[in-house]
Image (cartoon, rainbow, N blue to C red):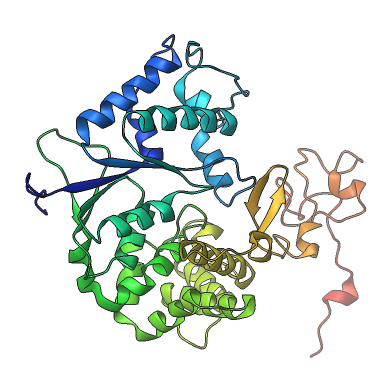
Length: 399
């Protein structure tokens, strides 16, 4: 574990404002002024020279919308027009689930911190890139400690850090002990060499806030495969360049095939089918379809989302709707595939669960003019009056 910088070394702290918001409890009935004052006192007591960087929630639909909705866990608060002297009448998590409430509170907190000689910066959207930019600028002249819990921060710091700068440390905001502080020295990660250059791609492909995690593919196993394969590194480097959607989807599918232990000529659909056959032939229980690799159509949109996220981390502004996102109400949501969940013939299959002989219009199969089939719950298309009856000449075979 890296040692803390010595006391006589000037240290600049860069605080993730989102993590800071979660550290202080909000007693119900306390005024917003008292809550804000507790944040100011906490920062002054724990960090002597700090800059706080907050997320912004005024920029309209964002690729982080789905993440915010998921983290809210169904909580929803109306917009509250509040002033510092007003008392809190709701739980903290419910109050902050409304973007307008959260932005208003951040604005008041920023003013209070600035008034107490703690500079603040408010990003237009997600603050990760701005936090890293602040840390890199600070590390040109002094040792810098970034305080935050987001894995994105660790990935971006490893990707952008320079050996010519002073030390940069990443410190989790939640300490398990007051005596020990766990720090990541970003300089030590530079031993990864060229892997640091494609680290954002590895992180996005294996699942981050705006991309899904492919089933059965963990961060550690993905990292090791990229570490061993020059081909994977070459494919990942395409996501760091000016790339067309077709090129990014082609590279993304090849990466996913490799992560699922396929070979170069395979496509995901072939790999998915072969794995299905293998699991069905050797399995003793029902096969869950999510255990299989994604289809090529699903991988296409995953690759587009990965490319957009990597480019956003690089500071390139792209139109989300051109890279796998669509608007739903006031939010952006990811596209998952452009194919139906199953072939139309399969989707049109109707099955019944009749307890009787399927001899009335209550039978959904008979009602729609279909014979009962093996998919039916009780009769299985064998022992009912609506079962298919094979004619004698259909059963004849040539000698």
